[in-house]
Image (cartoon, rainbow, N blue to C red; front, side, top):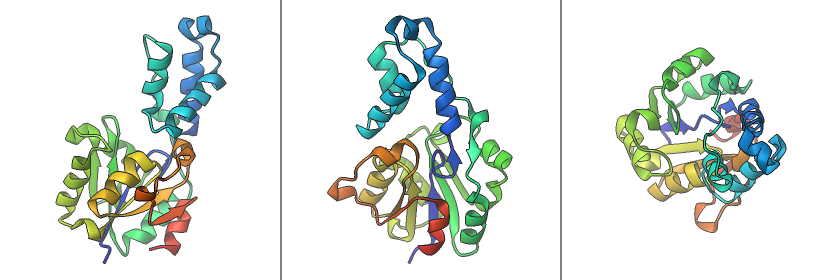
Length: 207
């Protein structure tokens, strides 16, 4: 029986679209990108290709073109999906909720800024534990914190490679949120999610 639901952050609870658009614009504005004749849309398309190929999104693009410096990720441009508070509030009445995410320093503060920190009992960030998805240890850390067996937990996220595959390999249930760059990936037979959803609201029909 499911006892705890773990959520990813980017393109799961938080819309990062504006962040990536700005990041591509800033990268395209560099002298290196101009020399290579790269536009913001060119760089964005390369990120899409990297994501579909299950490569580290921006790192793969920086490496491909040999950029000496990557444009910054601007957290201030993140936007909470409008249905997130209602969905989290409803689910928190029936389950314990947690976060398992690859995030920079300050995740707990960002959750407070979004007004959703009160819904989460467990917040496991790669910055805090020193391990990043898809490494199974970050999932094991979260399960240990929640004192739950894998079969009692669900991982909800947008990326098949970072969220679905490693959680499924441990025996957790999985929900693939088909948003953002992760929606460009195609599941392999061994990593097929237990459920798919195109919005957070659809979770209320699953749990």
